[in-house]
Image (cartoon, rainbow, N blue to C red; front, side, top):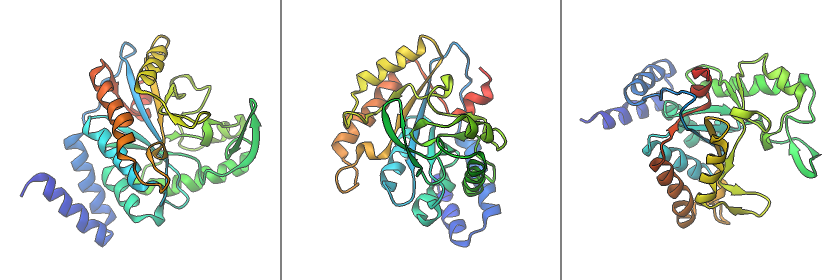
Length: 274
């Protein structure tokens, strides 16, 4: 029996028996066999694929497809998970448990809901913008407790605030948690520098424009963070639009692979101490 088949049998059996300790050991052994972490320097061009809105029942199939296809290109991906109800979606939950060696699990808010706020002329429901320090602390603790289950019992070190916005008070509270990286606007290395979707025009962005945005970022930083959402590639039924998906996402991976870049996660970037 092949190693891939054996891995599938073992993980399926452990999923069914809820033997979390043994499952963690098997998963770690598997990860050590297949993952080669990049050696990052300030002279590199580093691409971080940041997938937001990974959550229960909404675009689950698309989220999983995006993460699996990235792995085919030897590109680790950051999964911005909305933790509040993720346990209700067993398919997503099991995927995160099995594949956390290929992805970095990040906290993307607690439930992604907040008070309506107007910022720079735009209206947002910003969960971590108009929020007290105590409320932020509760949401961080709740999210971390959930996500540790999918991260080898370790708290994620990356936080992606919904709509990329976080108040100074919430930012200060985050430092009291396990958070080391906040990927938001005004975060330099950890800001997003390119996006696959234009939310103002409600249309996908051409691959050539994404590459140009990354090249612009590389002029002042070794990093380009590309923000992705699963709904970017969905149709009116919240199902994958195969034509759009291949024309935009797979084409993007193809073109990035041709470039002299290294794919990494926020955690790998943080540990590299660039």
